[in-house]
Amino acid sequence: MSATDLAAVAQAMVARGRGVLAADESNATITKRFAALGIESTEENRRAYRDTLLSTPGLEDYISGVILYDETIRQSSADGTPFPTMLAQRSILPGIKVDTGSMPLANDNDEQVTEGLDGLRKRIAEYVSLGAKFAKWRAVIIIDEARGFPSDYALHCNAHALARYGALCQEGGLVPIIEPEVLMDGSNDIDVCFDVTVHAQRRVFQELDRQQVDPRGMVLKPNMVISGKGCATQASPQEVAERTLECLYRTVPPAVPGIAFLSGGQSASVATEHLDLMNRMGPHPWQLTFSYGRALQDEALRTWKGSTDNVAEAQKVASHRASLTSAAATGTYSRDMESAAV
Image (cartoon, rainbow, N blue to C red; front, side, top):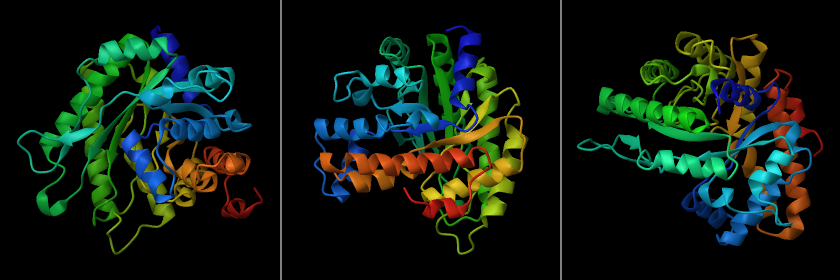
């Protein structure tokens, strides 16, 4: 795709009121989620679950794109239609996770770097031939104040890898989702999360510029600025929204068309409320939307439970959750909507 084509896809990914469904769990990850519900993780069960989500009636009203896993992009719906084709027929962009996961940094002490650059150009060409229009690569940034995490070493390695991935994607015809995730697992307060997120995003955009990644043809997928899970004092939703916006205004070029937040382990309702509050403070230089995984899927998965008898009900649940998140992307969500009849 040309730079103009890439920009058009990026704009479509963050179209007002629509966001990205992250359905790219690795087989190991989805096996754990299935096991918690007593579902056997066979290839057919994984296909059937993704089919349940992707064939949800009206999903295209709320979802602009779906990130698929390598296994999923090669699978088909119950009627034999390949998933990328089925999505495209509903005006939903097919995407693909291209990283191979995070591993310990060489000669380091428990910080991580995401791998998958080897052979990426060839994989991108194959995914384009399968119908993919965008890609995702997640970098993991750990906060541990006692150990001095994140180190400059970890920030550099992950920013460099994200930019190399982004450049290869744009060269090969995919819009890159750039995802530097500062984890919320620590005991740090919101001020520390803010400082780390600002630092991490600055490093990422410096590397993107060095490696000639066009900001008009990408989407940023950042964490929200929140208190760590172990922090005794949790920031209010209003403070989360304000500090996250402050971070974005300090670090993200206005040429980037949109920001699709990750939920990062927040509950569905909390992640939705935070997104809604930020949109109510707009307008902003970028569209603010979502790229949620568990926050969009968990309730539907618990409803489905691996049974064809539950497909219709699971789809109702999935549609309702997507509609609430869509409302947050336009600043029209309210908590009362959570209890509305599905």
